[in-house]
Length: 275
Image: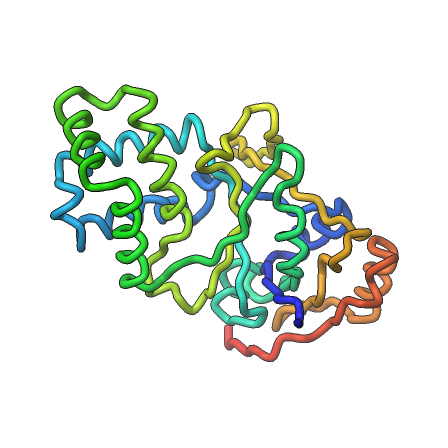
């Protein structure tokens, strides 16, 4: 069976760092452009599940969810697409078409996802409202209606500062919250590497940091093992306005990934865009 490829759009600077350092960074989800999407799950509750998640319960649950996201789970993500040559992705994530799309072998990430203390998941983003609703209803079935009533009574009547009640619902909701997205973005066909949810809690000493002009951004590095059973990188697509010469790129890959460079296919984007 052909290996499935997932594509990471990036600038030339980021591409150089990924190949030179042989790793890819999962960045703090709250520091990305998509951080508001972590709460899209509550929009689904408001739209279709008011009979299960009543307003007062939902508001308390949202407050609890935020607290556990920031202080315990601290999710970190890296974003990919199942399509390697999308104009919208070139514009948004690859320096306005001047960058590169790296085609990673999904099976490689699946094979190392239990790596040491950096466990992560490889999950497809769910865009369909019907599918999102179904998953939430399945969640209700798993937890059980009676248990939800008990939890609801706890949140509304006793406050929301009990560890065990908070973490139980927050962790389950986060599983879905990390992959639910408004269906208007379905063209992206996004796949995410996700670290920091459910039992995969975030210990402070596992993070490293990079600095911007006004902030510190935590990240987790996932290695690219060129000696792996699965070739990590299957192909590279040059952006519509990328000036990199294919031969120079091949030489660069030969230096940095000598055992695998010859297996990497290099292509030029077929997309076009008028500035």
